[in-house]
Length: 288
Image: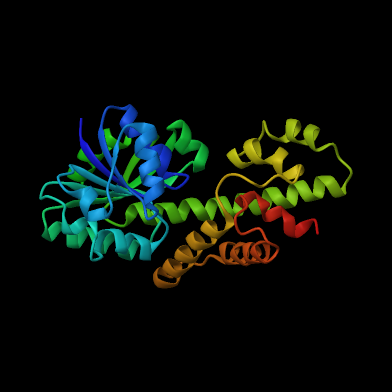
């Protein structure tokens, strides 16, 4: 079993770290709010540290799941960052969705210190983290992947090595492009069904077994129809991810008209007070 430092105890990180302790790993946690780290350690039998550097001391693996590029840079390369105290031969696994540029930079900096780095954003939301059923898309070397995979297996149902450093983040962008399109289509379909006076439960029964079926349809159609959005992946985070995606597209020349449009639709949902609601709240702008 490994000694692991886990940085970031949000709705995703907290259950992921719990799964690691349940798998028998020795876990030291760090969270920006120390009381939260202390409470987590008390509840799950791990330890907590006051800085990322302190948590990383002697760790075989350091795992982060924080907010954005700035947060990842702070907990890795900042004055009290983990990279300042990681031992040679350790691995850094980042589950945050950040820019591919930052993922490559961390791999480069880590490599100079004998630290392997894996960019490993996740999909599956809070439920996937709670149930240990996340999907993880990984960028890095085959050697880093071989070390990281047995650790990540504690909270993942699917782990795929998609390529070199930065490839995990680029694949997460692909994931978010696809989700944005599906949710916009689902929102319009449900809006149309209601406008046509159809029984939305019967419509779901009829179409969910055919080509229109999707995870979003199976898991969000009913709650969208009932106006329930207080769960899942928040609009604020989706806009952050889509912003990274559109920035990358400008650099590589990809044309993403639908993604850019849905990003603006999410801006409308934010303006309606839905910043922390689930991404399925996209339908709200159609039913005002």
